[in-house]
Image (cartoon, rainbow, N blue to C red; front, top):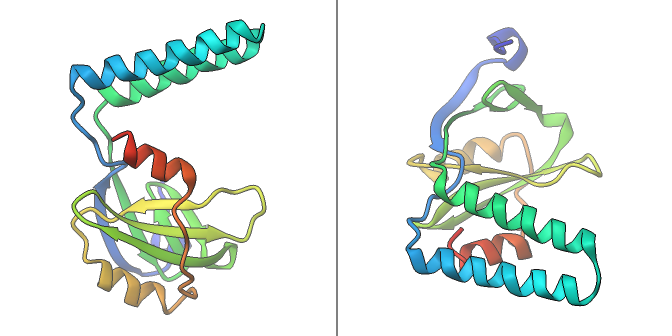
Length: 161
């Protein structure tokens, strides 16, 4: 069901962006990821860990699948009652803070920290949207708290994934 203005309030800013930054991968990249997977699989076999071996294979398959799949174009909006991603509204009362990661051309992301204990950080690609405009609107609803990029984010940037 598509959220309406009664549920979201007035939309203050909306944009479209790809769900993630897509890197073009050379055949060398696929060879290196395959080699890394084989080393980890060999380690799992050496340790007699069937479950670790299965997880390595599933992880490798997932990474390759996402590497060849083009990112979807997603609609985002900042509204009076919260942040809207596609059809999901994240109400302001469930969010704790925000931070904008700005490192063009690789990524311009809005990160939202949730009040919920088991909900991970929500990262929203800003695409061609002006980060300062997003920041000014977000400051009206949430405190701006500097966040560090996670180890997974740093590794994915390093591996161009």
